[in-house]
Image (cartoon, rainbow, N blue to C red; front, top):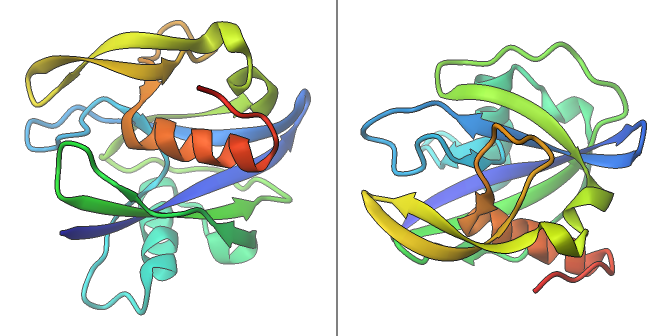
Length: 170
């Protein structure tokens, strides 16, 4: 099983707390190509632990040094439904936002108010594509019409985080 780690990053926005999301660039050999997610990736041999993996990957992908952020916890690990992967998610609060520099793995980065993720009207069942196949999956419609829906492992992590905050979604 492949071990991976991601960072759920929160900042204070104009409408309250916001979560940082990435849109992955399109690459043929990436099963998450074009999907919405959190910064992160595979654990490497020289990573001391999975938290270091999340921080290293976030620095590589966005130029965001999470050692300057407040680490507030870790969600329960998620095992992939379609690939042998275990994802560990660490939660960080940013008190100031430096300039972000996207690498070639990332198409875009954007923020979504937490309150919008809780809206019942945004909770849908959507047709998504994974490994060339169409699947029906629980998803969240993002407030950016040009973006794909939030589904899969990232959806499951967001749902877990919202449940902790007292905003459960189906």
